[in-house]
Image 1: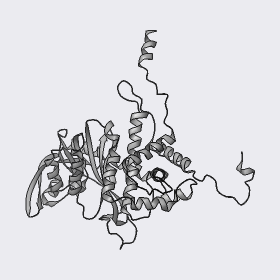
Image 2 (image 1 turned 60 degrees about the vertical axis):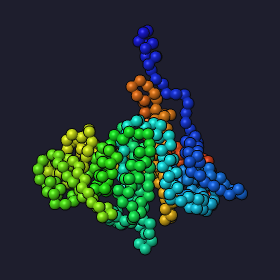
Image 3 (image 1 turned 180 degrees about the vertical axis):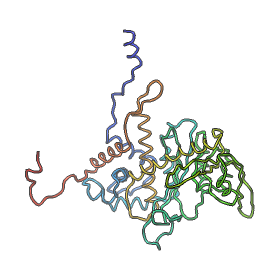
Image 4 (image 1 turned 120 degrees about the horizontal axis):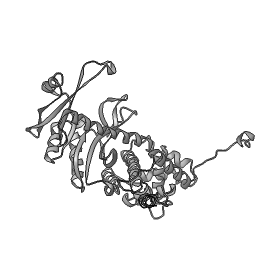
Amino acid sequence: MRRLLAEGVFKTQQADDEIHEDQLLNFLVNSLDEEVALTLAENAKLDAEDIYEVLVGACADGTSVSTLCERSKDAPHENSVLYHLRTKFDLETLEQVGNTLLQKDVLDVLPQQVEVVSDLHLRPYYGDEDDTDGLYHSQATRGTTAFHAYATLYARVKNKRYTLAVRRLTDGDTASSVLAEFLGILDGLDLEVKAVFLDREFYDSKCLTLLQAHNHAYVMPIVRWGRTIKQELSEGWSRAIQHSLTAKLDGHSWTVEFPVYIDCTYQNGRYDEHGVARHGYAADAPFIDSPRDARYHYAKRFGIEVSYRLSEQSIATTSTQNPVVRLLYVVVSLLLQNVWRYLHWEYVATPRRGGRRLWQWSFKEFINMIRRAAWTALAVRRAVPANRPPDDRFTR
């Protein structure tokens, strides 16, 4: 009897309440409506919520706004929606509002100390080569050198990634200017940064100087620049060395010194390679004492690629080159991931001793729920005209 009573006291059950599909859609539309100001004329036949409903539905459906409106009975006309999306925002305001929108609610579930990751996301452009003004050019990838490019700032908590900021990139942007902006955002948040994990695009003297000036621990792979580092990465075993880079700005130059951990691994015939592979990491963090530590901790940042794959599953398609519309679609796609993780933790996970129990609720299921709710709200067509009545083969 005592054992049964103890089990009854400590057994945790799932709450009786439920979150339905239409409520998920309402949560997203309300979030957009509260943070993204969309002023419409007094005699307009639609309101901001109608536009946001189509916007969220198109992202969840992975289709274009035009397609969703065309096949929906209760949706506004596609031209009306696209007109307001193209004319009611400017890039600077949208970036500020987008970051506020992404941070909303998320900051409430983040621990006091987080690891942050910054990365560049390139979406290939395959249009007219003469129409690439305002795009970001980089080394050829996936058959093009022009991209719709975005820099993102994530907080990583136990392999869960929360987007804190996103920024559109153009040819005039540099890695150091992006990093300076993101570090400024972090300074304005009530968070303790455990370490900053950066991609190799941020490996330069100015970025390293910024990290040291903000007193942040950091890890990033190095680039084989110069005879010295090439020599270090071509011989020897795993070790730590001191390295330096020289920076120049407005006629002034300075040298920044930093530790480099060189990790050696045996190829074992992988990819038809033999011998030893050497990887260098610029790392200055209290939890890194050896080259193996540097490789282990940096490898965890590759989880950020999952966020990009999820984003590709939940973004509205478009052929427009309007940078505002494209950035808005990216913000909403990242918002969907943040909302899913926030709701999963705050409302779906069961509180219990030793930590919450994360019930199975995949992002794909979440997106499908949003899609079905949008289809219902907009009365998406679920039948097509037929030139004759269906015969017996259509019944069972």
